[in-house]
Length: 201
Ligand SMILES: [Zn+2]
Image 1 (cartoon, rainbow, N blue to C red):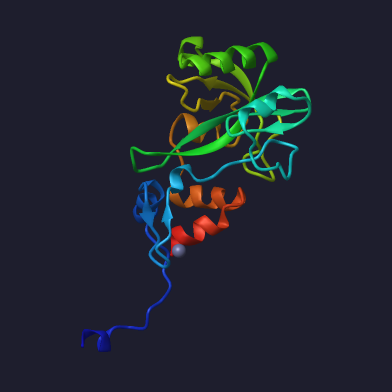
Image 2: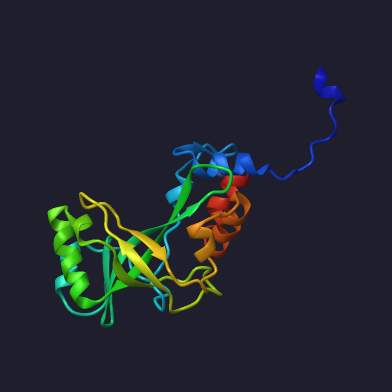
């Protein structure tokens, strides 16, 4: 009965705190289609200059020559790459989203990192200098960005911190973070418009 007196529904932007909740909830179920999302970890970037990388191969593919991509490592030309989590704090929450990016280590550090990962004690290496090897934002992000790869224990995915103050995400990553709405706009820029559609539904 009450429905009779309601005004016609108008599409309205969701408040920031609801967007942030949807972004950070593991296993958030989309309101329109029941799709289950892990939006904080869902966005995976490709290596710079590699528009259409193939599906990841098993890790022993790295032993052969030529360009190779696996879940955790890649070789592109002479560059050895490690997949890493780039955390961005979500404003108004204690949570982060984690972009999955590529980082380029020196050949020596790559070899040391990979064997330490195999032993599960890469955290004992300390921070390693690494170039960010993914473009963020996708079209306007800088190509050469300095940063640190921070290994974690027990073979976990390492964390990447941008140290170059000129990078558009540097300030957001170090302090302040980004609003949920700005993160969704970044996700769209990075090619995750489908995911953003579910989160805004
Ligand atoms: Zn949906």
